[in-house]
Length: 289
Image (cartoon, rainbow, N blue to C red; front, side, top):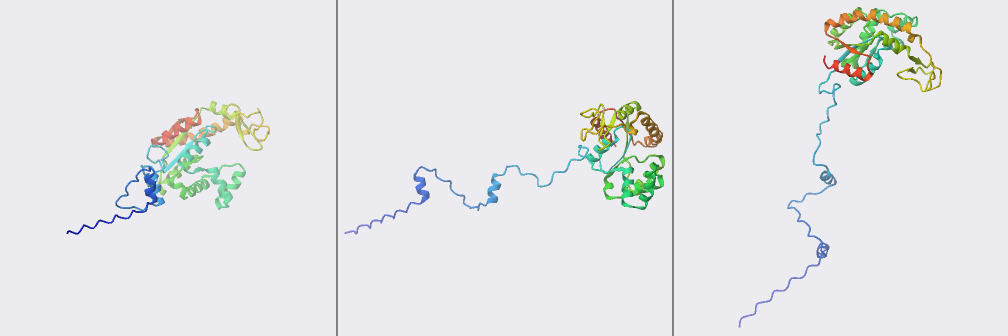
């Protein structure tokens, strides 16, 4: 009699796990893990949340001052124009845009005096007496300033050179330093407009704030907005004085125009317009160098 086949012992039921219990309650079946498990760290999770486009690790180049993709530096500029033409306003805009130092002989003289240099000791009594500083002192002070490191990328000249001797000396200094003057900007304003501009100025003797009866009047006519002091007309702004300063400027500037124009360095800009329009014209001229 054939022996009966032994019945297979039924497999023991596995104890339900938390995952199985959740699945039995209608939870969706979790996705099968990939064959190769990758440890997920906080850093990896952050990467998954990051946008798809990864920025270029290289720093973005700073726009050049001319906004055309090419740098104008080094840039050495001479700014000339009659008193009241707005040279101070344009000098501030140019130096701020191109990040070059503003070279004013008046500032250089004051710095030399404050530092107590030999040249400063020579300049101090001349300025105190209202006399012009001779070229033998002015030229070396300017040359020393041009040799400072921040002047290597360019300089804005204001009030220098004033005559042909200084212009010739500056050219020789640039040759020695391996540099050159790039552009001479002449801001042109008729004498009548200058007299009208400057005679309309009113100044506060307390805080030295300057107003203009038309372009920038005080809130209360004749009174400073800051301290209420009565405004005055400076001697330099009296029409007769202004005309005298214009005559002196014409005598000094005419030779410089004749000196720089044949060299192809001179650009004429209409200074009767707003400061923004004048600067736009200067900006355009500098790009044509």
